[in-house]
Image (tube, rainbow, N blue to C red; front, side):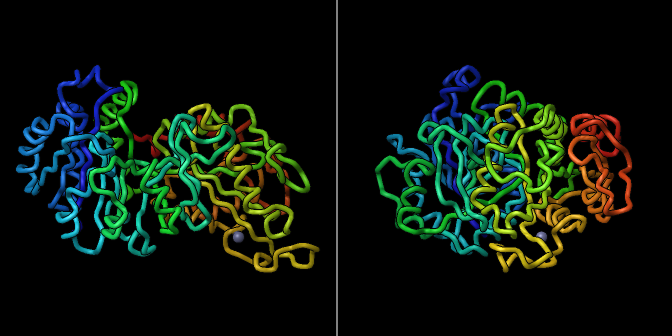
Length: 447
Ligand SMILES: [Zn+2]
């Protein structure tokens, strides 16, 4: 079985008022149990028994606090206590022998102070399929502007790490590395014994520089650091009401699928949005997304972008537009769990078009391909989900997938009569539609 390292050496600086600087961050109690106990239970549930605990700050207190929890769960903990602080990655060499005795050629790393509930087997399979040096769990969060961010390509390969204090101001995709990794044991060749190294600031950028492949494992599951009192309170609430447990991807979740143009941002009839400057969020759009986030539902954009096939917009330009969307939502505490676009277009014969994308696909709305992709990749419960659109294409796609279908009067206002189809209900705008869905439909009420 795969082995795991829990990094528990961190000094509790920001959360010191709770730990009183007397106990390591991993032992900060949440509902009367140390936060690390939730991690140990998660590991035990996935059959993981052998765990290296990388301690530093108050190492013996850590051992005394964790050993009884491990015994209850039948886990074997090996403690590796740093004499000096070597950063998140720097201390790992001490546990090399223990972690190399893993199965499958890889091991997991979890930081001891994050609340995490996720399908670990899916993460492990992902790294093995990609044969990458590392799979870094990544997700959007509600405070991207003060978080480290990632830049990835269409395949999910990480191109760049953008630490919060070192990146240029501007628009960025909301993709935050979370404190869980699956690492190949080959990584030990890159670790320097006794030298301070941080995963995000030092080790991963060094690997990229040397053409080693690192992938982002995108997930909408539960990963929250407890870096502030406010976030600590949120974690406690989410555990108490069952939201944290419900967000493991082994469970189905309701989603709100949203069209982009004319629903979230101003529609530009004819040629569509082809530049960052032409993209403007509609009033209420950010609040609508934030309400979806707060209700514990998935927010998933599904948008046709035929300009890509027509050769009038590149994928890089589209990504820059989506960076503006993510950044403006993020500045209002809102985030999209996933954004899918169809780059195809069926009609051939235009100058400058991309022949490889000029085809009849299954993702272009009114077909439901993007919705079914979301269903599979995010474990969506379609019967408890809805689509919000300004075009009958959106409504037709939603109906084909068995969703509740809501039209909005912004954009085309569902008056593009190419298909004879009416939404279940019409609303003035996306915020009204979202408020109706999260407040009035009991079937979607989450804990
Ligand atoms: Zn398509």
